[in-house]
Image (tube, rainbow, N blue to C red; front, side, top):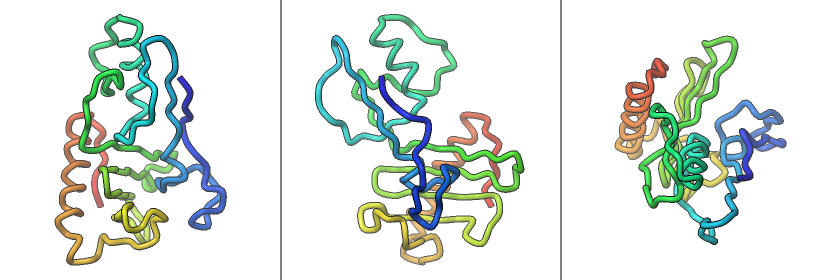
Length: 160
């Protein structure tokens, strides 16, 4: 299993740190190889929470009951993944909900505390659709996904 806990900004969005929720920081490699691992590339949404369930599944053992991830050995598509950005100063905490096409980012505070990007039309995450009337259905759908995540995980993150 080869992966990383985060990417780096490397100047994208005028940001040179890892502490962001843009694709440069959250879209990391996840490579599996070994006996029984099917070759190929998957475009489905994957979370680092999937590492333990996947390795347990390939090892033929049961993992802890409280695992939140899914085994990648099985074809279990999910509607979204969530990434959390936590600071020592909880006022700047943020969350990201990534669906197949859209990304919703929300921080507790800030000038652009709520952001929505259409990654199909805007892969560089430049045009924030959160304030656009036509994007309201997707904005509400992604807010609901984050609420569901917070409820089921006990995250306690309050949307702005």
